[in-house]
Amino acid sequence: MTNRLELSGVITKAPVRSLSPAGIPHCHFVIEHRSIKQEAGLSREVYCRMNVVVSGQGSQALTANLAQSSNVTVGGFITYQTGRNGVARVVLHAEHIKLI
Image (cartoon, rainbow, N blue to C red):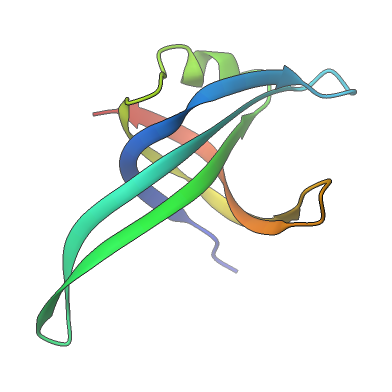
């Protein structure tokens, strides 16, 4: 089964770093993508906001230079998460991040 997503955009919410109860470091931020794509021979404006999480010991190295308004390309896998408030969302779990 394939589960891969790569998305470029701007970080709209500053990265928030935390430590899980198990001692695993996490970094959460939101990326916003805007572009124009061709579909059915017509131009279409494309927009999305995606929650991103980076986890594990390598997360600090991947996120050290990230800040709000940074342009990035993020690649990883997506999953469906339900928050403490019961609201569900799709989250991109980043495996690589590149400043652009």
